[in-house]
Length: 75
Image 1 (tube, rainbow, N blue to C red):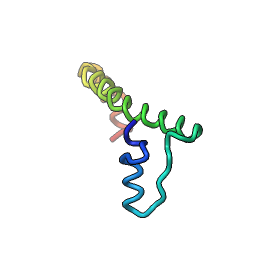
Image 2: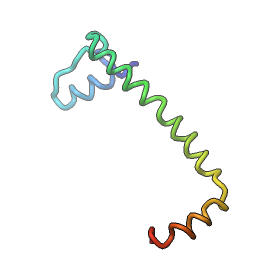
Image 3: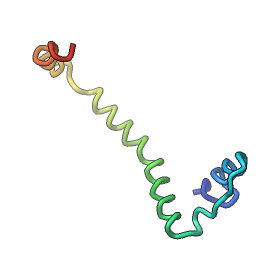
Image 4: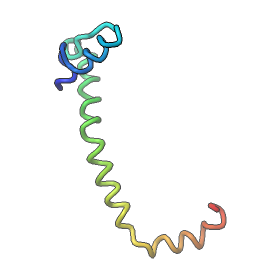
């Protein structure tokens, strides 16, 4: 959660562009949204890796009937 500190990455980024900084964890409405975004940011890549690994283990024999059935419509 260091990104949301008053001297954290997000406030430094905003200050670099001359935008006002904000106390991200001080306001309850903003803090909840920030924590949810950070949770999604930290768990989504792991889920995508698991999903990709499962997609790579689909047997080639399942692709052949799909090519035969839907190949003429898909190109």
